[in-house]
Each structure stands twice: as C-alpha cells, then as structure tokens.
Image (cartoon, rainbow over the protein chains, first blue to last red):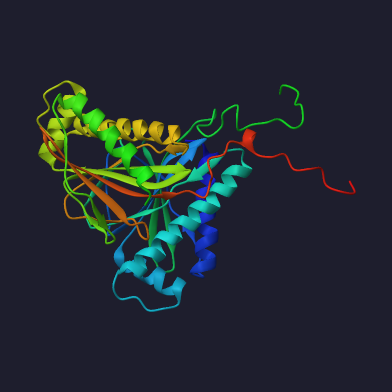
Length: 173
Length: 172
C-alpha cells in the first residue's frame, strides 16, 4: 500500500490522541496481515469509499478503551456501556475524519461511512481479499491498533463526468 | 428510517436469493431494534455513503451460510472456509449493489463499501444511534436476516452539474 495513504492515518491518530487524551503517541512496527483479524475486546469499524476504499478498524482492549473514554469525556467509566461505546466510536470517527482531510490534501477524494462498534473477544473479522496493514499506536494509557484494509482507486468511485466541471481549462499534464 | 430505503433492500434480496436458491423466499415480521445486535455465526457488513447512509448487515447461521455459499459458487462446500466466506460476502455485495441501483432509480445516489465478515456467535455489534430495521427472510437453505441501519445522508444526491453556479462576487 502506498505510504501516502498510510501517513494520514498515523498522523491523524497522533494528533487526535495527543489532543484528546493528552498523551504522547508512538508508532510501533507495521505488519501485514492477510488472514482474518481476531478481535481484542473492542473494535470500531469504519468504511471508506472513493479514491481510497475499504475498511479501517481500530482495535483495543476494554480496559484501555475505558481509560481513553474516561479521559476524553472527563468522566469515570467502569463499564463499557453505550455511552462508552459512543465515545470510542467517535474517537475512531474523528481520527478517520482527520485522515480523510489529509488524504484530500494528498489528492485523494474519500468519503467515510458511519461507524459500527463490535465488542466481544476472539471474534473473527475478515476483510476478505483486502490485506491489512496493522499500525500499533502506543499511548500512555496503552496500545491501540489501526488496521487498514484499503485500496486505491485513482479513477474514483465518486467521480463521474457529472461531478467534475472544469472551471479553468487545464493543459494536459 | 424511511420506507423508501427498506423496499429496495427487501426486493433486491428476494430477487437475488430466489435466483440463487431457485425457490420462493418468504418474509417474516419486520421489527425495529434500538439495542445492539448480538451476532449469529456469520454476519456480512456493508456500508453505504451518499444520499442514503449507514450500515447493512446480513446475518445467518453457519449452516445456512455454507449452503448459500455453495449455491453462489456452484460447488458443494463442506466447511465455512475462505471460499465459502468469499461466496457469502459476494452474496451480500450483490444484494446491496442491486438495492443501491434501485435506490438510485428512486433518486437516492449512494456508494457501497466492500464487505467485511464477522465470524462468531455472540459478539455485540452496535450501530450506535442508528436504530435497525430487521427483515427476516426464510429461504430453502435457512433463515437469512437483513438489518438496515440507514438514514438520509447529508448529501442531497445532487450531482455537481445540477448545482446552481453562484453569481460572480461583487467588487472583484
């Protein structure tokens, strides 16, 4: 996968986590996974459509998810209830949203779907023939993994002749 | 959720499943679920983005999944291996693709995401503040449920060419 696509997610995660959780963020070594993901306790799944498309998954343990949500919402969470789930989903949403803006600046028009939160240990999530690049993100509160099961589609599923109206005539590049 | 969004999925599922199984499909009672969904053995998740947005799940038991996948792949599959998983994901993809075409005809343009599969009973899957409409379908291979967590997207579905060109700014 293109590093141009990877960087926005790593940077997005670093920026959001540093701001929301007031932690230092360190990126671990990347790995490539082809087989199904075996979940930790909590997984936030978001889909991307457009010039980068596929699935983005944020995986973490319940303990760490609760710590993060407690710090973000400035409220003590002892149970992974629906409010905590919303909080974690929103974290995934904001990180992905930031990544989308950076992707746009890098020339990729991408759109994001609403998130789903999957809870349950040892559940398998398969992204089928999309291999996943796994980015471990270490914070003061513990580790979170970002799984990117995405591909490039430079012609753009979103763009069609109707959507693009050149206002300025452009010379062929 | 709008009924406009519901029918394209039910019709698409009917058509695809009837063709794949060669038998009549029966629909059970619809229900609305606000709580999280506790997963069956196999769940396909596909997202929609555009004038309609949200997530669609297709869930079934492993046995039904193997039988439906066998039909999709035209091969007798025994285990729910990666070939069978591809088959079920493709089934979800075809139904959702067909539904999105119908939605487009009704004026709701949406792009569908690639499918993801959740394998394992008893996981909780939450669509947060999107309630789900659940459509149980009975096929010759077993029960097949469609969960729709959709709403009207912020995008109106207007193509850029349909937008009004703003007048040129004053004083420039």
